[in-house]
Length: 451
Ligand code: SF4
Ligand code: SF4
Image 1 (cartoon, helix red, strand yellow):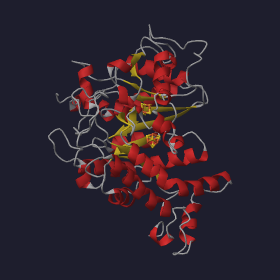
Image 2 (cartoon, rainbow, N blue to C red):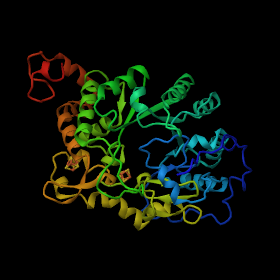
Image 3 (cartoon, protein in one colour):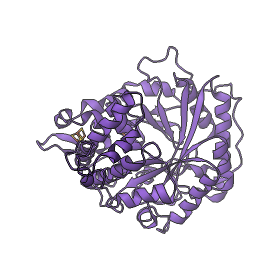
Image 4 (tube, rainbow, N blue to C red):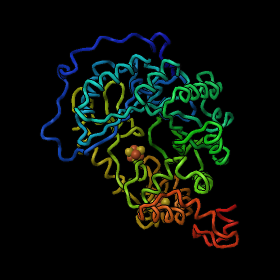
């Protein structure tokens, strides 16, 4: 693999000349179909990759770095006409009043600040009256400057920063092109964001190097970084040469299923005793939604998926960020409108397959309502009775969802009664030490949520 990071001068190239006024559809670009296709979701999510898979770092578990091979000889920079076509289609496709414009990579900041100035200006020009636009960007934070942070703050970007825990755990796999540590640079970027008042969401991947240290990781993120929005992402990396979702073995960097369950349980038990309502963890929010009977905000725990696609730098659209591979290419926005790609039989079948291919073992599982077999990309193991398609992380999820059931019932009951979920902390604390723990585990409180 070549070092594909953009040269510094390229990353800060001046604003390119726009083609066409904002109220003109670029010549040849598809227009919004009318009527809107019946199978199009009312709203959908697009993860756009303006630099394709190109990144200035070389994280050893990154599934995107191998995707360079899909576009041999490409410069991997989104052109202005593609940008405008994409934004126009995204904004005009949403049936609801809100839309999120989301950027990730590779490393999207390699496009330079001016690209993102152009993004926010275009969005302002193209949005419908009354349409509310949320900007988000996922970054490794190593290239952030005051200029960057001022722009992100001004336009209220929600910035996702990847940090895997304290320095030694972070640097185990998140390395630069020379294999060197990156934590210090990431921390510098993170602190700059905080100093500028930017909303930050910390993304922590869980893997062989940090899976056995859940509380060390959680307390570091909460207390040292002061993070309040946490996204935990299990690393399940197939061991193959293609970088595609193929094969049934995983690399040694991947998280162990049982360790993943223990990781979630340990953090949940700390969170439910003291941080409900002040620290937000994606898996816990999604679980609470399921216990309340609402749709989870994350696709992995939905019954079906297919409403979140990935957009490559050249306008190619793939079924999902985790399936940027030829078999899941839907088309290109310069030839087919985004809403038609979302509504296409191929994409609807992709989303429905999540439900329709669930093994019987999952269909009869008591925590199916919360898990739904998790993400199809991880379904490559066998059930105890030999059926294909069980999720690699199943053991972890069974343990986690089973463990949190009692506390989730307490929180869901409070919400249904019009109260707040955080009352669970007082309920758990006020039980007598020798009384049964209110979580329903059957253990004494002092051996359970009062430990
Ligand atoms: S394949 Fe997985 S990540 Fe992609 S949309 Fe479906 S559930 Fe979400
Ligand atoms: S916990 Fe396991 S068996 Fe249950 S729905 Fe999830 S993957 Fe399937």
